[in-house]
Length: 320
Ligand SMILES: Nc1nc2c(ncn2[C@@H]2O[C@H](COP(=O)(O)OP(=O)(O)O)[C@@H](O)[C@H]2O)c(=O)[nH]1
Ligand SMILES: [Mg+2]
Ligand SMILES: [Zn+2]
Image 1 (cartoon, rainbow, N blue to C red):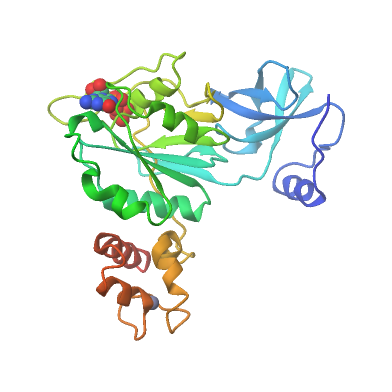
Image 2 (cartoon, protein in one colour):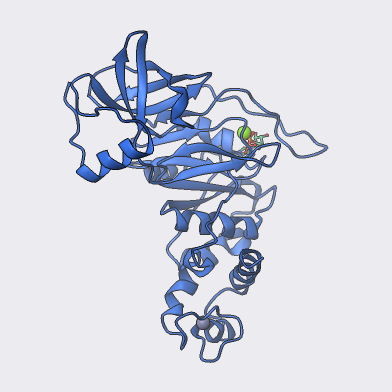
């Protein structure tokens, strides 16, 4: 079976971090984790035309999630995973006990799903954007349920006005009127995609629309608390019909944007980060400093007040 050659550094890192295994022997293969539940992992082998296999997980490997790239081999009692390749990134969420739980690895694009109702929370959106920028994940902002507004209203909540100039794509979709589903599918090509957003915005409906051959249960919104009902299926990686992959995480209420306090908050705000190069002080925080290009642009109305306020909020949180 053909194998991808590993760089020397990759080998060393994997071996050091995990086990002293020989990753170059002919019995060791690579693959992509499709799903993981109950100690059993479904893997799509890297070698073309080989159907998915099921592997046991060694207990000393730590967490394995959808999107992980792994090494596996035949052992006495079947196939087992022997190492995980270093991750590009890891999406996490808070569980019911306030603990961070890994949900997906090596994601390349986040589809941030908002809707006409429930209304978008731009502070949460900016937190997702910050988290995605820090983890080098592309973003598409999806405003769903566009059927609920007048056709004259071409930019509800000013999302296009605020976010497009800084390079984010904003797509208006409607599942019930089949608007821009094909455009969304095209954005997903060549990416490992994940959909996030609060309950009720239409994540399950969108997933079902872009993955027509699978049956994704849609939770009904309760009138009382606007919360979607939970489903119990586990996360899984799907191939999209036009290309690209989608990690579906049913029952998960969306990812918590997790950020690294060691990276400046401004790095997650594209327009602020760009202007920061023009500030007098290289460590300018854009709050009160003289000759600050960001506060100047704010006064001139060149950057959005809402974005700037969210930047300040996150700056304060990061300094706690
Ligand atoms: N009007 C309208 N309703 C939608 C649309 N997409 C989803 N919904 C409804 O919104 C509710 C929540 O959808 P669901 O996919 O379960 O949201 P999730 O909690 O984010 O997974 C359901 O009642 C859907 O039928 C849409 O494009 N337009
Ligand atoms: Mg759902
Ligand atoms: Zn500044």
